[in-house]
Image 1 (tube, helix red, strand yellow):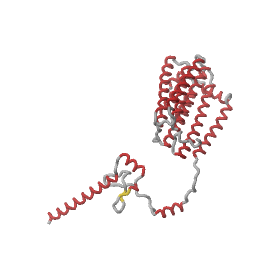
Image 2 (cartoon, rainbow over the protein chains, first blue to last red):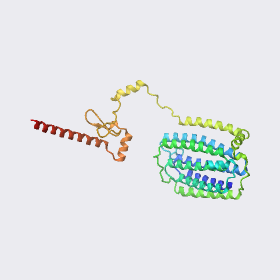
Image 3 (cartoon, one colour):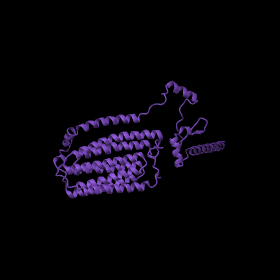
Length: 99
Length: 279
């Protein structure tokens, strides 16, 4: 399979993740959609690494994984703090800064 | 995955038919799971669909000559990150079902349209870029993958690598600070606890659930010395569950007691009759 197929697949997964961020109301699910987008990016990086025949893309994908892990830890901690404060994980309820 | 890895071991030139078939199976699996992930209502199901997507991506990494990343994907993403998600889902409660009412009118329709538009934009853009075939594979995509990555990380990318360590420490500290709950009232001492207990009028703990001839489940109310039953011995959650399931443990106990009294009365009558026969 040529790298183009993988790149198009990563585009589709990225778009699905983006739509998920837009339509879901639950913060955990918004987070999962962001993870899906990061995974799609990683797939594109790995495909481009194979396309160019060097490992730079794989190193970048590795760094993306590290950053994603850190991001998930902090994000879920924030989510827990918000849930503890207002007993809800809906993105609509966190509107204190509105108006 | 092992087959893909074995094939990847000799470069990424696996049997073209095999790689195509595997790619299409995994692509269909990944896309359908991703779609299900954003459609399904239960958060736990979403996490499981995300696991399917991540595992199929791991196999794709192995097919593309990235065995190290394939394992990192399985261990870090599917193992650690997804378990963290599941933990939070359990903590927050799976029953917090998402309301399906749209807060912004037509949001879903517009989101879908925007997604389709974005996808078309990206696909057309990438299609114009004319992605060629893969470069001839070297051993860096096979057995030497790990050493190649290590060389790059510790030479060209050594500064980003150092920055990553700072990021990880900051993230760990941040998570601790965010998850930490400051005590708003001083911790009650033993003396205060004892004083409050005496003042409340009930020194002993609540009675445990009742044990009867026919029932000894935790939802059975205890019987007090005066013969009455009390629901104070049953946990509130259990009482609510009984109400939901339409059970009536107190009624059961009352029926048992009435039956016992009846049996006792019959026994007395029998004894009296036997006494008369003896005379």
